Image (tube, rainbow, N blue to C red):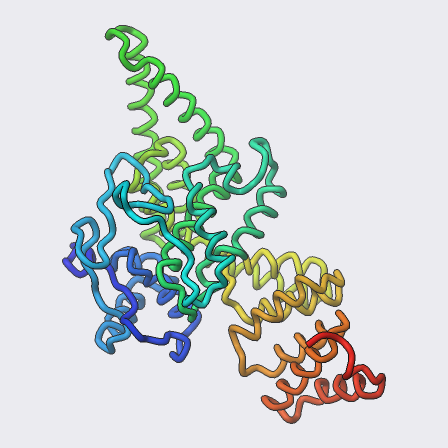
Length: 408
């Protein structure tokens, strides 16, 4: 039975600093979803924990003052989510209030660069675009092209990328963008869902074209087709919810995806798809990480790098995966840009791990940025005076007389 708390919308308490907390990865994932827009009951479903564990974590955070409750979903008040019609998807854009509402603008006080905030606002403004336009691919893009586009956008817009930072309202914006990107990728990547969605759009266009005509066989046939699609959608949705209850989240996501393809305007299906797809992504990330680790141990490094990159598109807050992706991008591909990005992210996620700083130093050294390399090797030795590899790297720089070169 739904309680009044289930409808309430948690938000981080003013002045709290989540980065100082000792959280498991699953708890960190759950806390990152406390965005002032997602109700308690949905957090319990998508938090990355079993529902009872998510409930316990939320209650503990509420009791400690880390989070607080805003208004109820659909009832207005501070923190309340806007009421949505049941037959339309959520309206997403830069302005969701009145026509006279001031458009959102970058905030230099946040821990997101202003140019990145501008990119987020611009992308959010076109979330109602067709799926292929969101991903930046042609309408007939294949699975490989879809995957490449989605992974690139996922790394850019995944909310976990900014976990622990002061992001203000951009946390909710990133959440909306990532959910829509995932929906686009999953719908276009499933041939059956893609075909059903195409047929649904065509049927909707026929219905609009026939609107206003006198009652006749055509209108009756169009209404019958529409009702048949809705019944199919309902059947798929019920199958998906049964699979979710049994914690078969990949199966649940596939079924709800089909429900959404047959009835794309159903807000409930869209909401539930986001929830079950989040859990399916967690399952997929665990599988991909296991595959990557196995390939790494077998020294099949090219395959391992592909699997680590795929896993990071699903779980971008995994420092070990970033560390190994950085190492392989450096050693296998010689891709210094990607190696630096992965190594920097590993250092952000686990700043007290010497190995991450040592690897970042190696990336800088390979790029000829020797002062940066020295800084990271010294940081590694501060954290672990016994790090012999970092010490050897520093000695090598001194022997080659490179410490005065490179850029700071």
